[in-house]
Amino acid sequence: MDPISEMKINTEFKLNSADYIDNEFIIFDDISEITLSNHPIRIDAVVLTLCTKGGFTACINLRDHRVEENSLLMISPDQIVQTKEITKDFSGLFIAVSPSFIDRTFKPLKELLPFMLYIKDNSSIQLTPEEFNILAKYHSFLWDKVKTVDNIYRKEITKGILSSLFYEIYNIISRKAIVNTSHNTTRKEEIFKLFMKEVTENFKQERSVSFYASKLCLTPKHLSGVVKEVSGKTAGECIDGLVILESRALLKSTELSIQEIAEHLNFANQSFFGKYFKHFVGISPKKYRQS
Image (cartoon, rainbow, N blue to C red):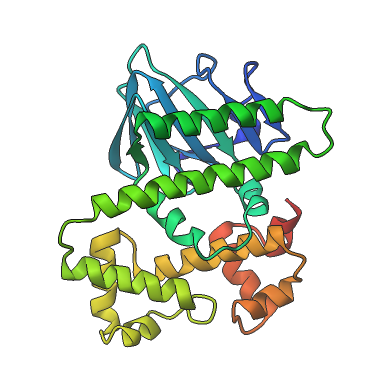
């Protein structure tokens, strides 16, 4: 049993002041009903927090991120989160979205993969007043649409706005990433960037570390050591992470059969794909699609 407790939208976020779409999407701006714990947890959702006042420290995957006024915190489902040092005047705008809702919102877009990888290691970013106001307007617009429960296309409209919001955030991050990475990168950082570029382009066909080591004219041992040092993950974990992300998106957002998805991702057969998927996700592809 995992010693770290898990918080799910459908069990932990039943707030009177929030609005929901099924047990997959929640939007709110009042945390007074939430009992915050300083114990580490996994939140089974993508969580966006815009800090409007005060601040707190979020320890995410053992790294502290200070969240202050006019900043954005992004949490992904596989991260371990611990909240510390919350100011008494803290307030914010919040959105939490289940992984399956995210999968059905976004098609398997290659350009989103670097974004998802970036936020895993850069969970908190400081926004300019203009950037903050743009994202706050999205929150307000989303909330208005989620409240229209008599609209039969409410979920589809929400997905469309949510997709636009993520692209807006991606645009902000892309601009800041250029500034933040303007320092001279080390050789190891450069190798890692080249490795991720190759993985993004080839992960559907190739999952072996030796393949990517050969592409970069390195030994598998040397490549694995560099990737682990720069990212904190093994080369294999980086590759598997993209394969699973693509698998989940295909299962939720396409009509491809599981056999066709297995072939698309270059698995020997459906059975092998099923065992691979269950190893990382915990349930079979069929059950995941039905969830």
